[in-house]
Length: 129
Image 1 (cartoon, one colour):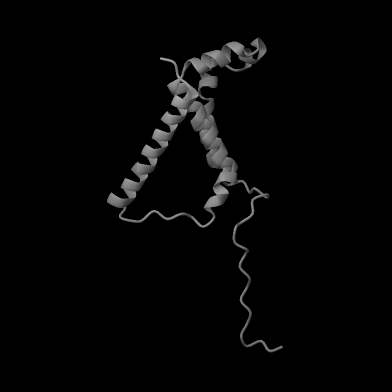
Image 2: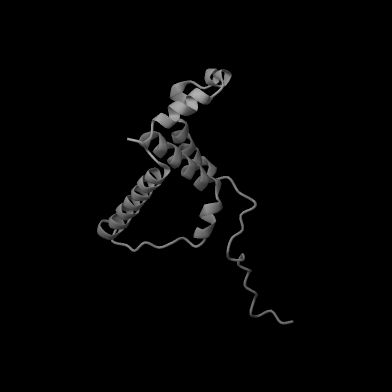
C-alpha cells in the first residue's frame, strides 16, 4: 500500500479529531465542566513548545504510518552523519522533541506580546490633585 501525502494528512486529521473528542467527552462526563479557552490562546501558535510538539507529532505520525520514509532518509544521509547518529537515537528523535517541549514552556520568549495590555495600578480615590 502506497502512502500519499493526502492519506497521511487525512490520518493525522482523524487522530486529532479523535483526541479532541476524547477530551471533550472526558470533560463532559467525568469532570462535569465546560471547555473554556485560555485568555491568550492565539499566542500558543507562536510558542516554541507548540512548534516542538507539532513537529514531533508530524514526524512520529509519519514514521508510524509510512516507516519506509525513515529508511529513505537514512539512506540519503552522509556516512559521517550516520556514524554520529545511531538508528535507535534517530528513531527516538520525534519523542525527544515532544519531551523537550515541556522544559521549553518555562523559557520566556521576549518577542511574544500579550493580547491584553498590562493592568495599571489603581489610583487612590482620596488623593487630591
